[in-house]
Length: 199
Image (cartoon, rainbow, N blue to C red; front, side, top):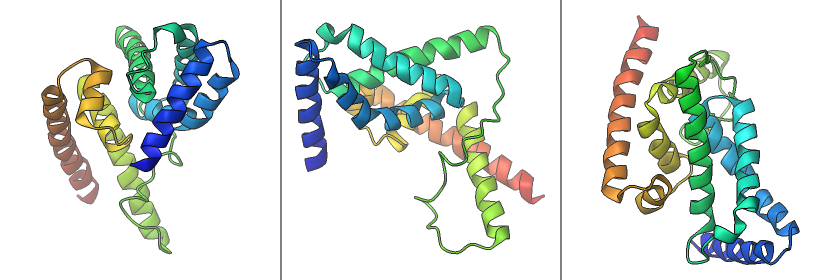
C-alpha cells in the first residue's frame, strides 16, 4: 500500500512538472508505467506489435493532453483509460476487417509462474504447463472485449473495481458483473479446451 501511495505521489509530481513545461517528466512516467502498460495491452490486443504501438500512442496522448489531467485523479487510472480507449479503436477496426491471428507468441510474457511455482520440471510437465498457458491465453483472447478488458485489469493489473469503473466509465457493480461473466465463460471454455486435450 505504501508503494502505491509513493507511486501516486511521484505520478502527481511528474504530471505537475510536465504541465509546467518539464518534458523530461514524461520519461519518468514512462519508466514507471511503460512495461506494465505494454503487458496489459498485449493481453487485451493479443498482438505485441500493436501493443507496442498503442503503448507509445498512449504516452503521446498523455503529453498532448497534459493540461486536461486533474490532479485529484490517479494518473494510472487516467493512463489506463487512454490506453483502453485506443485499444478499443484497434479492436473495432479489426472487427470490420477480421484477419487477425490469435496465435500470439507471447509465451515469455504470460507464464503461470504465479500460479504454479517453478521447481525443476520434467519435459512432460513443462509441455503440460505450456499447453495450459496457451489454453488460458486462447480462452482470454476469445472473450468479448467488454468482458476481457475488466478481467485483465482486475487479474493482471490488480486494479480495484472502483478503478476499473473509472477506466471503463461505468459503475463498480457493472464491473463486478462483467468480471463474474468473464470468469464463467473462461471456466466453460477452459473446461472444454482442457478436456479436449485429454481425449
